Length: 95
Image (cartoon, rainbow, N blue to C red):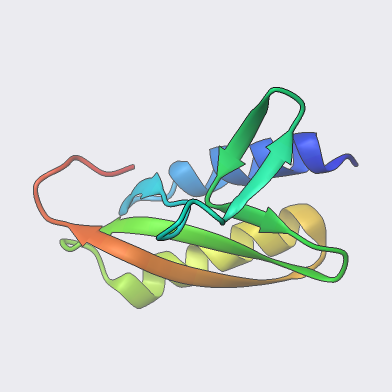
């Protein structure tokens, strides 16, 4: 499976989780999968592991949302993933 289809599948699965408002590319935009002509922000895939960076709705349990995101990414890739809650919001509709 290519990084392109993998990153897009992870993004789609994570954004469907209740409580996930958006993916976050990090303070300097460094967290992303770079593809020809575009990038998938908030998803970093390496040889042995990966990261998902999120914006989460405060109305949801942060740990539960992060766990669901990690499980979704790991199910798609078979690799270990770390999840970072980069920001929280309380006034936008989430997943």
